[in-house]
Length: 122
Image (cartoon, rainbow, N blue to C red; front, side):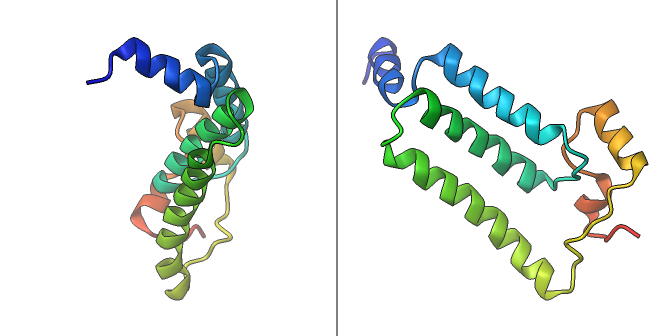
């Protein structure tokens, strides 16, 4: 079994210094949350993970292929979720009302309750 110190040293080589990588990732995530978008839970999770991977690219080894494959994987998971909804006529032009933006800001949520039910916004 790999000693945790060895693992952290190895990850430092690919992911970069923890404090820098986490600061970059969190800054990117905060930018995503600063919009008036109503992300679905899967979109929000994928975006959060993509921000983490981008932080690792920026702070660590930009040639680490796993970072790039992970980004593609998370984007593909969201695309796979969206395809059936598009086939059913789900509106991708969800209206983000002022009330939704206020709810998101007040509760720190990156998605709306209506999206979780699969209903379009009127």
